[in-house]
Image 1 (cartoon, rainbow, N blue to C red):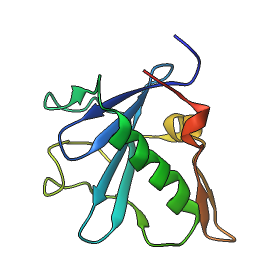
Image 2 (tube, helix red, strand yellow; image 1 turned 180 degrees about the horizontal axis):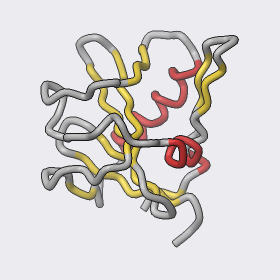
Image 3 (cartoon, rainbow, N blue to C red; image 1 turned 135 degrees about the vertical axis):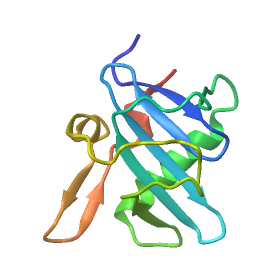
Image 4 (spheres, one colour; image 1 turned 60 degrees about the vertical axis):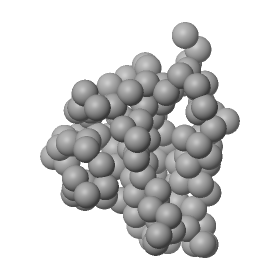
Length: 129
């Protein structure tokens, strides 16, 4: 499998991006009403209701591209980190206490406190399985 391979999963509402080289996940959820993207890095295995996306990956890829763009730029879409991902937004139960440094580094997530800017790698840096 090529380096920086990501496998895509969904529970029907949220998308999970899972690197094949390391343990950990990135969860993205888009709220169309408020025009917000919620994100969460976590290490625990998602529940049984999550399925591997084998076809029609375009929406999951478009959501990641929006996440990449608007996590850095202020614009029409707000990007918010989820401290407590609740069941209202999806059925994925994740623990917010785990160390997510490795998964954050894989996605190139960085926060610059002095300028209050966050960045992640663009989707072009990954191979989608």
